[in-house]
Structures are given as C-alpha cells and as structure tokens.
Length: 439
Image 1 (cartoon, rainbow, N blue to C red):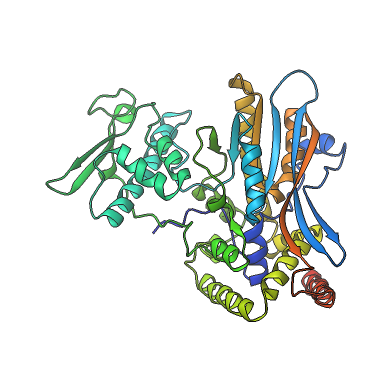
Image 2: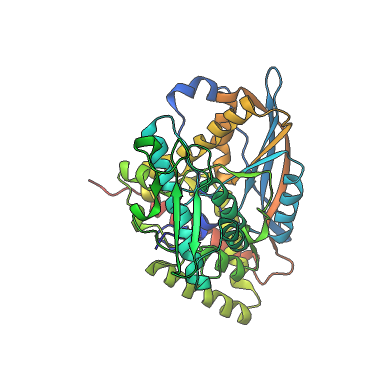
C-alpha cells in the first residue's frame, strides 16, 4: 500500500509527536553561498507566546508581507500555519488567503503526483511513467471503494476530489503526459478491466523510444492508495482530543488559484536515505499505520476520557505545553536533533528551496499577479524569509499576527501551580536531551 497522503513526520516520543503534529520543525542551516545576504539582519520571529498572567496564554503566528527592494514585482506573503489550531484561526487565514491572486501550499505529494515533464527524453519518459503510476493507484483505489473501475478519468477526478481536494488537483496534473497530451483511458465493462496509455511524443499508436507508447500494463502493478486525512490520522485525533481543528479539515483547498509547492514522497525518501536517515523508522505514524501510531491513539483516547473527569484540565495542560514549546527556539531545535542534521536539511531546507524555485519561475513568467501567499508550517518561515530576501532581493514589510491556540486560564482547571510544574518539567526534559553521551 502507498503511504497515507500526508506531508507530516513523527518523532519517536509522544511529546515530540504532538509537537511535530502541530508545526513543522525549525533548524534549517544557512547556505554558504547566501551567507553575505543572510548576515545582513536576523529575521523577525514568526512565532510568539502572549501571556496575561493568571488570565490567558496563547500562541500567535505571523503573516508577513515581503516586497521587492528595487523595481516591481508581486507582494509575497509568508503565512505561517499550525497544523492544529483554533477554528477562529483557520477562518482568519482563509479570509486573508482569499485576497491573494495565487496561493502556494505545503503538502508532500505521492510519487508521480507532481506531473510529467523533463529536459531529456529519458526524463520525460520516466516522469510520464511515474505520473501514470499515480493515476493507476487512484484507479485501483476507486475499484476498492466502488467495486468497479471508473467509466472515465473525469469520474476519477470527481471521486478523488470528494476525498481530498488536493488529490483532484494533483490528478489533473498527472493525467497529462510529458508531451502535453492527456493519457488515454478506456474502461471495459464486460471484462471489468481498463487500459491507461500515453502515446508518446508523436501522439500516434506504436513507435519506439520517445515516440513509443507507454502502457500501464507494462509498468509495476499500481496498488490502492491509503487516504490519510480521515479519522485514523493522528493529527485529526489530536485536534479532537484537544478540542481544536485539524488544518486539512479546517481550510478549503478546493480553490482554482491554489497550487501545491513541495517535494514528492519518493524525493523525500531518497534525500533522507542519502543522508543516512531511515524514513521507515518514522514514516506512517501520523497516518495511523505504525505500532507507535496505534499506541498514540490509545493515549489520545485516554486524554478524552480523563478530560471528562477533570473538567478539561488534561487537554488544557497539553495545549499550554505546546504553546510553551513552540515559543521556545531551543525546544524546537532540540526536537529536530532527534534524527540528526540530515533530517532538518531535507524536511526544511530542501522543501523550502522547492518553494523558492517555484516562486522564481512564477515571478518571471506569470504576469498580472499582484499578490502571492505561501502557506507553510510556521517553523519553515524563518528560513523561507531568508531565502526570499537573499535569492529574490525582497525585504519584509507589514506583519499581521493571528492567535493559533489559546488557553483561557480564568475558565480552565489549570492553575498557576500547574503551569510552574509544567515549565519545570519542560526545562528538565530539555536539559536531559541536551546532555550528549560521552564517547
């Protein structure tokens, strides 16, 4: 089975799972070739903790505009987001996103979902095969759910979009081969079978090399895809346990001007493997397929049960812990250290550069765009801001701050003593994690 559709990754401790579920980790390193520009000024933070003693504590996330230092160009807004948060937070984000001409959003794609293309014949053939594999996986998923194959690719798009609007967008890209022609699909109802073919560069049956047909039957058999945004998803369960909302459920991705700007899962796997990081150790947890994920689900179920007995104190305490940890740069950097430097380089650096490369192409080739929003985990934003300033010669302008998570201490069962104990526990945990074993 394919991995669940999720651009999130889990830590091997439950506290780090919860932290990482909320927001993608910080820790990107500056690149040597950009050091001169990056050293000009330390980027302003995108996360802050606001506390009114004895009354409330909240996590706020910035939405920051960037404008060209010289000349003309679209305003680029970095809109940091938490992957779980208050309903009001997502409503405000959706309202601001609607004012932009284009939205580039974060989501690690399934293999082949980025569509076909390439500079060389080999790249065009390989990318078309990968895209066909993605389409084939959704066809097989349709068969599992509907007990038949789709009558047309349009039917498949409708099915995929109903499950996840992002899937419909990705499928629209993958149905076009590297020579800008739609894949040929035919459903044989009598035999309960189908064919999926690319006719190659000449668009004619037969041929060889780049002119040759590419038939799905000649590729590895596609497997049904697991949908990862449902009730089994750890993030959705965590949001429910804390009486919060899950980002993928709270935001409407079904917008014609929204585009995914991210790496594909196979690219992430290869990049992590090259750096000695075994993704199998951590992958699948948030989709609900690993042993650790099943243990976490039991824990989250206990939170719900205990909350009913303790007037919501458990959920509020966990929310306070999240607010405190996310507002602490050292805690965020420590969380990434669990998997070594290579993990941060892939999960933050490489994925951020994909966005910057997409943005460069858009600014150069797409006219009449006045405003572009980049919707990514807030912990990506410090590094993203550095790259926009260094590579596109932009500078920060206006800020807007949105409250992502709040605990009303006047209504909560959590008291000042609980807060002090929790902060002491966090400090002790950080000290223990920071102690390096002697060689």
